[in-house]
Image (cartoon, rainbow, N blue to C red):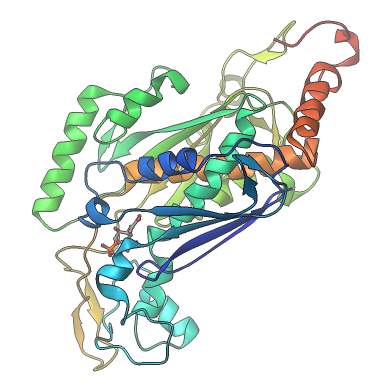
Length: 392
Ligand code: EPS
């Protein structure tokens, strides 16, 4: 199984992630991780920091000559912002801040974090609550994606809503669509919607406001049998929902057409099982039934609230230094981070699926992991009466 932890603050020296449990022998190049980090910076509506923050990557352990060793993989992402202007303000050495932030931003972690940890400076909260941390998740997700790629799992995402502009889907995107998605200004497949989304971001930016939205994240090629119905914390859909809602500013998740089918009759809501392949005629369940992957694409949607940091703060708050009603402090910010959130959602889905795949198939070396997976798919994943026939 996969264990991973991230550390580091938004304007500190850098971020780090340690992953343990990746089998030995997996091809892993810094460029592949760097590529994913670059994808996370895409999207019209990101703030000025995305232009100069460099995501400087170093692999500190767990990889030799381009292949994993089976030991913990340690990745560091240095913040170029640190050197520019934060060495004093974010110094780990004893000292005091020159500028306490005392008027918490409504909707951000500021106030609850200050109350919980007993801080009188919101910077102690916002530095870690910042979505900068998702760069470390994406680095870990790049490793998980590489592992899943070895057993034929491919993950992608696209924006399905930005502000009030929504996309109507007529098919599930595949990996062949990814270049087009990534070259869209807002990571959206629908050209008409893209134009409206860009206009909406521009209008919100002009007014110092922010926008939320939604992304769909899809995993193709997920083998039958990941997750389990036997206990609440082993249900694959439950794990995916937790992983996606943990992305900063994500407030809702659905698996498959979970929201739409709640209003249908049962006779219309479920996916017919078709012989002899046992594939489903539709994928309303989003590839998970009873908490177990069913061999269809795993599909989830994550909804992000409009970012709480506003370029023109207008919502009432209280200055904790004076007790007076005021407007919150101003921080440089993005107008929207929905396009980037899709790339983070891919990483989180990859990390859950890789963990479940390792739990089911195990293996200290990549060869063992792939052999176990292949053997299961060729044999155990079939029902007894289908012995001898290949699963399509
Ligand atoms: C963020 C605010 C902005 C974003 C940052 C997340 O940073 P800053 O306040 O320094 O301008 O740019 O996102 C990243 C740095 C990143 O790499 O995603 C926030 O408050 O969450």
